[in-house]
Structures are given as structure tokens and as C-alpha cells.
Image 1 (cartoon, one colour):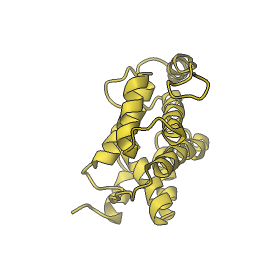
Image 2 (cartoon, one colour):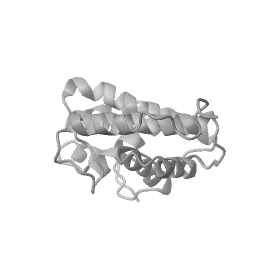
Image 3 (spheres, one colour):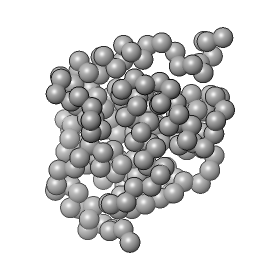
Image 4 (cartoon, one colour):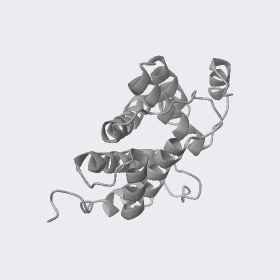
Length: 180
């Protein structure tokens, strides 16, 4: 059984690993988009404001929103929902985290592979391309704020890391309509 609202209050008072923060933010967005629980969005913004400047929390939460919305549109399947403070991580959530991590590392094929598994489709259509691009955009925004899954070099200045990721992502992905 997963903890409820009391555990969510505790989350606002403790430091979370970046992985835990990403999962909780993804859950907040999914709760609002997929299940109408828009109160979770405010909770997500408050969690984010503990890790980035307050003025950046809203726009960065919007990046999570865009990514989750792309996932929902591409999957066409019902989403699974866990309470925000549940310690267990679903396969869907782990794949969402994997998309972010691989996009931050600029590993295109692994990002695409994780996105394919996340949405449950292997056709390289526009919906999957949108998930791929939303994952890249979120990865760059997170890197600009020094937020990385474990194992990534986060000792460098966040803006330099984000610029480095962005420069490696300039070429269109393999499924882009710009590629023949």
C-alpha cells in the first residue's frame, strides 16, 4: 500500500534525489492530465520550487506537462496511476525516467528505444517523434537547472551542460520528416 497525503507533506520537507523528484513530478502531471487531479499540479510546482529558483518552477513544470501530454497522446492506452509519494516505481515511470536520462546523455537510439517502450508502439510516426522531442526538451531544461539522474556528470556548470546537450541534439532524429 502506498502512503497518501501525509507522506506528500513530508516530501516538501525533505531533500529528494533527482530520480525521486522526476518520478513525483511525472506522477503529478499524470494525475492531472489522466485523472483530473489538478491539485497535484500545485504540489508538483511546490516540489520543484524546492530545487530550482521559484520563478523557474512553473516553466519547468510546464516541460514535464508537455512530456507527459506527449506520452498520453502517443500511447493511446490507459495510464497507470500511483500516489505521488508511493515508494514503488512502475515500469511506465521507470521508462519515462529512462527517456530523460538517455536524452540528457544525447544517446538518440536509446532515447528512442525507451520512448518506444514507454508508449507501447514501434512505428516511427509523428506521435513517437513528439515524445522523443518532448523528452529532449525536458532533458535540456532539467540540465540547465543542474537536475540529472544519478551517474550523470553534474559537477559542471548547469548552463554549460545544457548547452552541450543542446548542441549534440541539433541534428534531426532518425524519424524526422526532414530525413528522407
